[in-house]
Length: 46
Image (cartoon, rainbow, N blue to C red):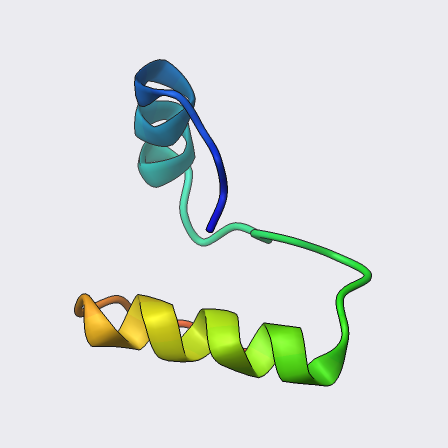
């Protein structure tokens, strides 16, 4: 989903809530939310 390395992923998680991606289609955003929810994350589209 994010293509982050280990350090970048840790920094990202330590700073949540945070925007993951901007400027994506509604369909892509919905698919990303679904993938996050499948692994137990809470995600929303703004």
